[in-house]
Image 1 (cartoon, helix red, strand yellow):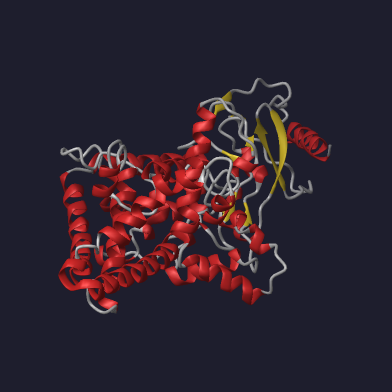
Image 2 (spheres, helix red, strand yellow):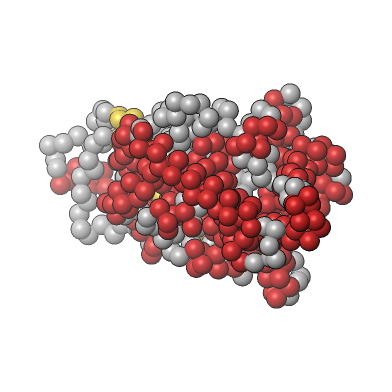
Length: 469
């Protein structure tokens, strides 16, 4: 009501200031489509007299109706002048240019990273018979870490599908379809088919929403809301970090695959089906994943192959002492890999300065690109050595906007993305991996909470009718 009276006063004032112009209620106003279902007037509103006291509010057309949109203040003031369509065009144009530039250089760069990974693997395997030592443990850890975060990650997203003439790094073949391909391409705790669905689809296209399976704040709600003293919460989190790949990630990604199968078969999916699943919950009994199925298809092959069959030849070479040393080195390396992968992966999208979203948006829309920036954080950027140590997860903003690009393309894009964000006033968060880890753990234990993006801004700039979660 207040907004309607305001508009009426403005129209009357405009008629007095510009007597030769018809009022906006009488004038036929041409309409300009911003997206599929949203229209806004393509006509300038005459300036009201200075004596008119305007409230700190603006009006925007939303799905055929007019809603009042408050003026944002503080570190959200940039939203008042942000042009989401211009931003989308800039981001889209850069992404297309980067994709068009990919070629032989990207394959050479991938092979370089594979060479580094194989080097660490060779050092670790050839020395794992030794008494447990830092060099062997670090080499084995970097071997496993790089196979996942760099080689498998970007290949499974399709970063090299078009450029690879051999077919090995085709997203439709890499590590999937058989145990043989899994062992040859990417052998880890997670089933590649399950990870492809959970990460590439559910996480990437629902970032920061309740439908995001990797939403840390929601997944750790039982810890955040518990009566445990804060030291006990931190102890719990640190324990999980050392084994999170097989305690949480492998079970939950496979659960998502089973739920997706239920949906395709037309079966009912309940709220319980969508809850995160851990190894303990599967052992206790789960409706979607049986104990034997999970062990035989997901973690069993890796546990037996990596920790038993890989060091088994050492029994014939040096007996039980060599074999025992190798198993201990492999276990300690796995713990280190869990820690390394956690602090480079999980803090990308968690912290008190990261946003959660109450609505869904279409892929590749202006707000979709915006969300990938507002709910992602980069680490230190630099050269191949720096990026290798970060698992190429230090380009998370760029990766989330264009998940199907190569590692080399992300290196090329970072500065230009920063310039686009600066041009449009969009916050671009980049901090050390250790600072991001601290902020993430604070959210996990309930010391801090993530921000909630203003729903009214999303509704006012909707590409199509906003979907509530």
